[in-house]
Length: 608
Image 1 (cartoon, rainbow, N blue to C red):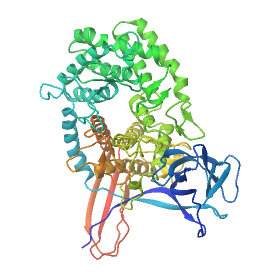
Image 2: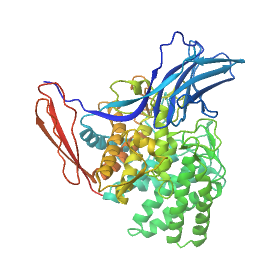
Image 3: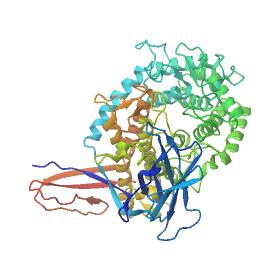
Image 4: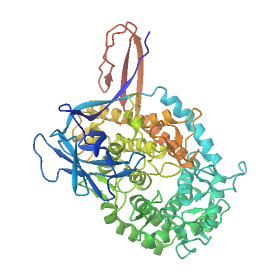
């Protein structure tokens, strides 16, 4: 008897040869590609003939080659031992049917495929093998991840570091992440604050962390002192002393994230101990908010600690901190601070809107940056700061998710596997940090999980509004799982809206399926997993990886409560059963030729 193999279909476009190639260029050749929605992306092998070079992809609609229909590729990695580099490309190519690659170096231009032949684009479908037992695994992983997250926080029960110290990872070599970062710690502590608000747990963990933050704020460091810029210092030793080595500093997201976490806790704790809020929390919160107001437009290093400038992630969390900070200052009776923070957040709006690239159809990570601009950090910015502007349900954020997927689906070997369960997602396509040194980077658990989390949050917003709205900006993402999707507003009381809601939920689950596939048997999550084998690499038991999966699971559970699924299984021969009822959508798998083939009828009801 054959077992039932479930498949998840998502729409994308593959390439095929128009005619056989007699010879391909040795200087440049296509490695991998994808065409999803209107985004053409892929990777290219380039012979390193000189430092200065240009690689472009030119595309056509039918036989019409128009000026401007060119995508500029960018360096990804290499050269390898054979003298070849990897370059990547991703861009909008609406209606593209064919393309070619041009490599210009030393005054000469080489073409791929060459021989007056172009790569032809034909419609196909992408098939994901569904992960079985995802619900049960997520339930088990939630308990395991919570325990491992707590293992990385000093407490009376865990004395590897002092109480309230949150280490990024227990890894002390190759790489050494045995430090505390303001950003990472604030994100992890917001998770514990959420737990405290929900069920009263972890109060001592929170108070211990508060004590540590007061110490760190007043610790002079290479970024400055308490009132001279030192709050922007990203990283400290675990004994609460300054880290004085070379680093990407300042990083201006830390004070904003710390203020956000402490304000959330203070708002809950005010009715329990107002004196603690006034005398302990507010003296930590206000300097962080004042720092944001003073430095928000002066640039700084990104959350990956690599590029300096005006960053989307940083600006988004700063914007949220100013809005919530103004409200909290008002509750503290400080009208002057409220006015300052209100004016600051108003001044940020133009900057935030400038991150949108209409030509690329996604939000860029850095203003005037040298890379493609597509970056997992933009999704994290929406997730962490998008409570008031550019939330996960915004069409620009969904388009950015589509762009991020497009940049990675052809970049990693594991994404080319015939048995892949979904797309593995990394930080940005030009990344070279491999977890220890620099070569070619890998997928990250944080980024793969965040891709799912963004969708769950978007679904929650759609459920609240009672409808899903698709426009030309976000359409490509919806076409990934529904080839017939079109722009419009779809009520969740109608069949079309329910199908879109369910399809999007299932699509989000494919990312968590990837996490399940490459998590260790015990559930451990490192920083990265190999682009080739899926084996975990980089810092082990990364605290942020556990926070990311825990919060994504909570977001999924919240949405799942709006979507009830009833599954009945019967045994038949080659008969496929479809049941239709009012207010439900029903699907069945295709008939198989096995005499023991089961037929599964799934009835899905979406409650708006």
